Image (tube, rainbow over all chains, first blue to last red; front, top):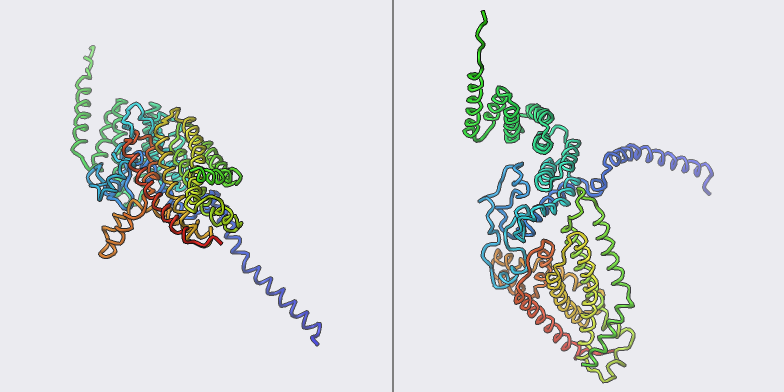
Length: 304
Length: 259
């Protein structure tokens, strides 16, 4: 017969085992809880890092809507759609498309069924902001149809700056929704506080939509400051944004009449530009203006 | 013909009594209304994402209704032992098959009318336009495509033992055609012989249901009307497949024991 002492010892062993197991689990559980609280976002919690993949798909979906459904699949030649046109047309990204916006990704029909099927799918290259499928230029505000996908894409991948800049561009330029564009950019800045692209777009909004040169100047100058804080490799890749920031600052100062300041910014832009020749003409124009101003200065004659 | 319509009438009445359609319709309406309530940059005219979602749900729902309703027709008659008394009446096996087909197809047509009215209302609430002819073309070709699916499921119900296996196989076949059917020739071109010929044979043999399915893009993005002769040609093309499946079903059923 088993003695009560054995039962007691077994119970004790079980308790020790339970305590050890609980002690082992506690740190893991605490780490899991803190991770869970960090990602309050439902999508992030559900999909993890794959959200970026979905975000990219939705961005491409926005481009598909921009073309009114005329879009290559994985079976088609997509060399002209490597950079989404919806982003390319904003000027915010460098194009990797071969042959511009060629329309012939479908090629010649492969057989009679393929030729017949093409009557039932979008078969013409159009852009929503240029009238879309109906070729109706008065309906260019139909570009609004891309917005749900861009919004979803931004929600899924808040670190992707391009999504915010593209959304803000279309909201501001075609939909004339300046307030909403500003909200988008501010949300982007909350998620990417030192983004030069977002600051550039925000500056454009202040300058072109609100005509507030002071705030535009502040935002662009902050963008230039952040650009110089970037690592050397990133600076090499992002030279376009520095050129855009400095060129716009030069233009702003020129309009405000601060010609020496404008000259400084344009010369800075020339250093980072891929086409310095074009900027040289503007620099020469500013210099000519400065010379004209100085020649117009009348030195008063002394009275005595 | 009277016998065929009598059988078809019973099938349609069965659809009223079953809850499949009501559940799927309410689900479609709910999902669309929830999506419509999302505020996108305070713009109340954004509609294409809703149209795409609604049309996709309509296609899925109609396929579910078509396949599940058709797949259980003959097996249910056999299980309830009503097949033999039915055939004892002045009703041939061919008439029974045609009646079942017609009933399921007309039932799908009724379902589509409800769905497309809802779709039109949803689109008009934001778009303020009624491109009725475009909707008619889409709904008509959708209905013809469902005719092929119904005929296929009816043939399957005579070949496969259980309605569940028949439904699953039909769903897999239809989903494969809808997603890959258009690109099979492109896939074939990249293959060496004899796979190329094999895939090409499949490409030409299968009914290209994806043609009306992909027409959704034209409706969603407000493309102009398709030329009516192409619509008629596509309808004839699909009806030929439906007829072929029906004839095959009649041939199989002729040799099938009813008990």
